[in-house]
Length: 234
Image 1 (cartoon, rainbow, N blue to C red):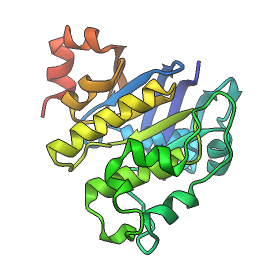
Image 2 (cartoon, rainbow, N blue to C red):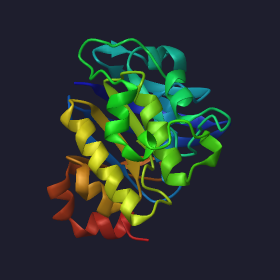
Image 3 (tube, rainbow, N blue to C red):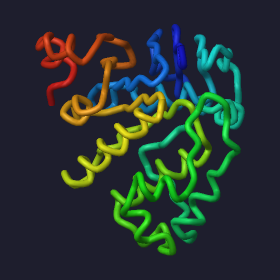
């Protein structure tokens, strides 16, 4: 098992946000963490990465307990994180942004180079010398993912990768994630866009008000309209 989250609770100050969140991700699997805005998806990712000041529960990654690990220790273990706010270095070029994320290859994880990433995201290959601040939102999203892949993670958390993107860019993003999966990368993506999740996910975990309401295959989710209507309909 690549990632095993069990009984995860999280707080922002005195506010209890996550309530016993549990799910698992297998090798090479794509799991969609689905829910409306404010359901607790981003908080779940931050808790996994050690970015919450207060959290309880167990987080197992590649057979190692990282429940108490600092964010840099989690990243060094091979768990990549792409936040939803696209934190590119605006003054650095595309190529320089990628170098910031470079880590040595690690056993059991796909090895990425700038040239391979330019093949995965051709838009980036055409603008290697462009500063990050002079890119569109979709291009910045691609750059953020590519920079994370330069760390050669074995699992990546993608927070709202399709949010605010044009339909063509969403299709390109889905194709890139499919290629990443084909390389053996495990992926957890948080999404409100059920259509996007359908394109790439093997399983779905539905979260609402900080609690897991469904955990099953995408086929099982499709066969359960009540879950979709109650927890995912806008």
